[in-house]
Image (cartoon, rainbow, N blue to C red; front, side, top):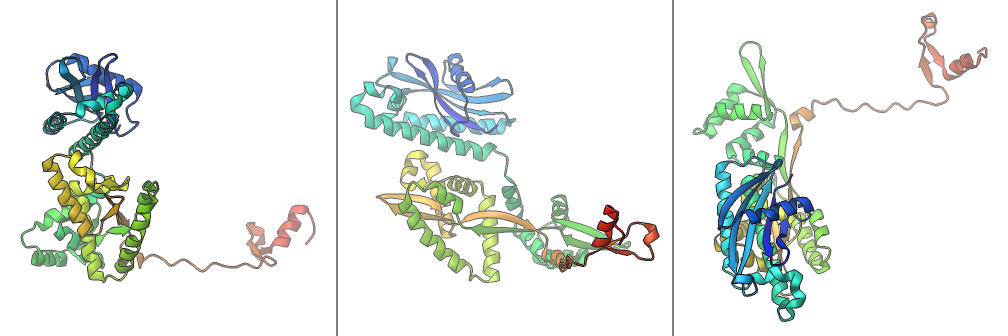
Length: 406
């Protein structure tokens, strides 16, 4: 089950309800009711956990001022639901994020209006502010989700590989081995010469465990190091992203020329430039903050103008730093349209693995196809009595099947 973040509120007529959850459509009606009903068990502001079946929820109950609520207070609860085991230190981090989320809502004097979106007809003069604040809360919940995911989710395979190859000494060692097998002693000498402060044995053991290399012993003493797979980080056009912004064709028209111009230049990069770019891509995917932005942009665009309203000042500074880094290295592009700035992927990134080049050279070449004349094909005889005449024609076989004399 995916991690879910939800915000619940106390409706004055119905009782506790889930107001919004993210990812969308991941919270079914039964689970939604269970989460909302947890509010009835909490009367004091604070963080608490609750378990049901194989799920665990981490919740923070708090109140905000409201001009429309009974007692001038809206009762709210933000929850994180997961079926994963959460370590105590991660639970503490989630608690801090929930507190920050509550302060975000409490600092906005009109945010309570969002919880009357279903009663909007009773507040004719406030429709615009209600709709605006509903969108704002949803954006804050999404931001909280990604902050929690950064701390709790299991790393993807491309992240795990990038975290390993983000180390320059490992990146260079694998590249050194891509040219072919090397005696272990030769590799050790090269490694100590270039990285005297790194532990060679630890690196070799790690690469063996991760099945990147194999140590082959010849005789009693001599050992060779063989690269088993080449790993590459490469850029690909953001084709899938374009599908997510097809409701804004003007943005596609702005993005496509920039993508085309970039790849025209990219094709002319030297081998050394491509090597440096590959290492940069590993750095990007190894950094959780940069990877989260990349993941979000793979699913669509982000309105840059909305960012100050979506995250705290501290988070915004970090996010803007990440965005500037990704812009500098041509991963994202800013597009201005209709007085608004959007952030979209300029190049998507992917990790690929392949047989090392030295190994590909050893693979047998595909044999030339044999073209057989359909009028004179021969079949090998399978009967020992035909050993003196080991080949039979198709006509011979057919005549034997039908009982005709050849």
